[in-house]
Image 1 (cartoon, rainbow, N blue to C red):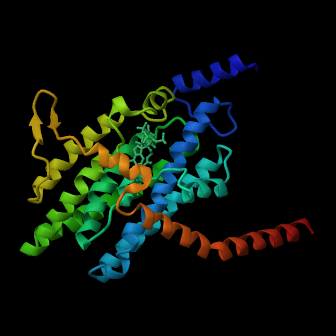
Image 2: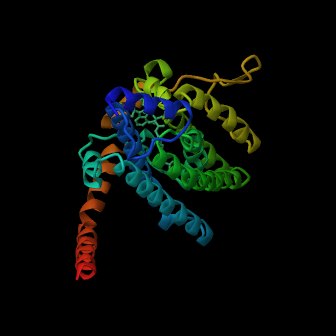
Image 3: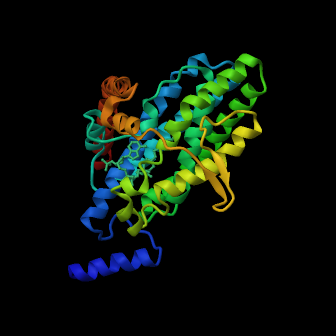
Length: 312
Ligand code: 3HC
């Protein structure tokens, strides 16, 4: 097939909602776009283990500790599926990790905020995993097959994460005055950064047009942010917490909430590496990478030995 036919074939698959698979021809920019998004997503899962991992030793009961441990392990697993999906696009794991550690690749802004109290673990599950699912449900139908398939399991697990976070918030909100205040304080600090997770407004989102054209994203940043606010405000109200937004109010005409504007200067500072915890997160990842060198060497040496046994 010549290049025009290859391109037509690609477009026709997209039009029929068929997935693009690793061995299929794809435009270079589609491949690059996916490597950027999938690897950024993988990095987010792995860096996202840090703020919560920090609370495993301080969880208030054995049950809470087990649930949090399981959740943090899930995030590690999500990172691994997603790195594998990215590798099918022709980039190596080493290159991907290198991009993270040298600051060339982004990861979600949300993980550059500190977890100050136990209620933050509730707020992260409820809001951060809630925002992640809102974004990721559509990614189960993304056009690149390995990414779409990885997202099916990830979404099931994220749904459990969201529930465990909301349950923590429900318990705290029904608890003592101090516990309720702690839950409200966590909501106050995590609300706006959670809205920023969806990315800049559509008119300032350089990647959305191609993402929608190629069916990588099925909904825009603003559409998903609106859905998240519509879903989350009633959940807050139900447990007696208040979303910290004076402009939040129901708009009957659009059947959704109007809401205030996140601090976009803060968002751009955070994604440029200047958030409260960016340096700490990358230092922790670098340390984990260095400490894991012997594991990678042992695995490579075992694989070499196994290959030579098979060959003999
Ligand atoms: N944090 C960091 N960077 C962000 C960002 C965020 N919240 N939102 C946008 N950006 C970056 C983009 O990567 C892009 O930079 P680049 O061109 O240098 O890569 C720039 O800001 C402009 O944004 P666009 O809207 O044009 O970019 P996208 O169309 O890629 O949209 C996105 C951004 C919505 C995050 C999209 O990439 C996406 O859906 N990614 C997959 C989902 C994902 O990565 N989720 C991470 C959430 S955390 C998570 O899943 C872990 C879970 O356990 C909670």
